[in-house]
Length: 318
Ligand code: AMP
Ligand code: MG
Image 1 (cartoon, rainbow, N blue to C red):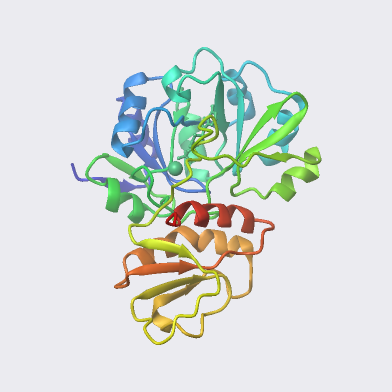
Image 2: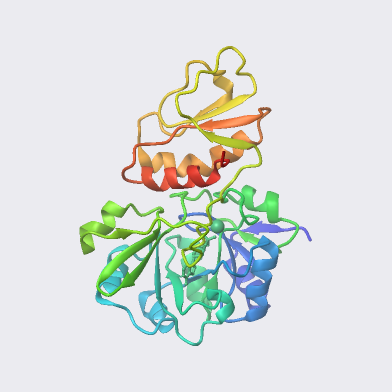
């Protein structure tokens, strides 16, 4: 199958109505979307991605009213966050309505819901009479895609259509929050900074989970990995032999490493720019003629926290 890349939402709609899966743009990363209410379509998503079915999917729709149909209820803080940040890079875990198949939520009694902030995908969602289940459009465990080229390269043989919405503007997966009693709990750091959430609902808890706590949002300990070994830079001295070393820096080049082997996330130290570049640069380094990639962690604030989370998960565990 040769994938079609285009901007025709009617064509995307037709494929989705037939139970096919389609690549869709969002502000975070590209999604691999299927009818969330159709078990065969959802099964296809897991197959195409090679994703284990214990890793639940996010349900996407285009308004808070429609979103409310897929959940049992919304706590007050959820409503406050929805009104402020939806559409946007925020996913909420809420008690699941029976209309959502168990396969979508891996049998959990909560469903992850989100309204993506991308004009083309919002238009598509508005003409569909079902929500879309969509994980990131990459093979399970690899770096998330932020352009149609990334999707086509890895999944182009397996899907019929990619809706082309250009480069993802945020470039990091959504921030995932849940609610317990009156508390907001962050399960995955992502494209909405925790500081922004705290402005609306006060102090939140951050759940640092690992593969030993799989209830947590897809956050297996090792994820987002390039094929090359990726290592966190801890002040190592490299000496002369740096031809085969790649380096991903926040603001400045590393003086010992060949300049062509280095990528800078944001020279001005802008976290948003760094987030937007992160996955594309990881892919670029993965395709260079080098043996391993060193990455620099960012300051633990703003989107630096989510970026560091992805880098640590991508790193080889020594
Ligand atoms: P992805 O779409 O690939 O970014 O993955 C979305 C993540 O959300 C997955 O890794 C899931 O584990 C997580 N997720 C989705 N639904 C739930 C849920 N009901 N409870 C906890 N985590 C969830
Ligand atoms: Mg993913």
